[in-house]
Length: 219
Image 1 (cartoon, rainbow, N blue to C red):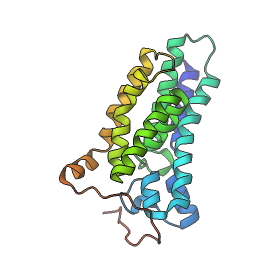
Image 2: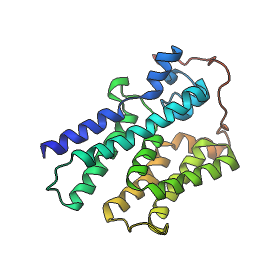
Image 3: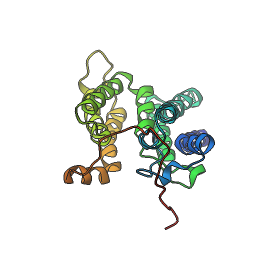
């Protein structure tokens, strides 16, 4: 029981490393949460600081989700049954996402967790996750809207988990997790959905210059 709690805490701590915040501060002298959408994620970093910062943030955010799950798989007690092992991996994955959204080291203000979910998906469901990435890319090419592409990729995920051929049939904990992903991603994009319905959601663009407008977080 104790090792289970410790692994979940470790996963949350890993997720709490907000690469967008620290890369922005260390290399650019700014807090990306004061600019753009005010999210500490890869998309806002790309918009505010450009691809040289945004791509590392995307990779690091995905990596921490992957590490949280793989580390738990490596350190989990061997006597655990298969069901308990799967539930522990899911719990550690969720803890990593919560760490990304509410980072301990960055005043509990982080990103939306999509890239971290990507890393968790690659650790648990590699082929369905890659399928969801393809869905994202297709809709990104068609719409150039990150939020819409992320939402549709998330919604497609449980269908890919169930129906994608040449993969093991998922046990119910993983199936439930895939459904939660399909609910979670739209939930974290509610403000984007409202803008989409109003036709006000901006198309994606990468920053070419330093950010011009800072948002005062103290207000």
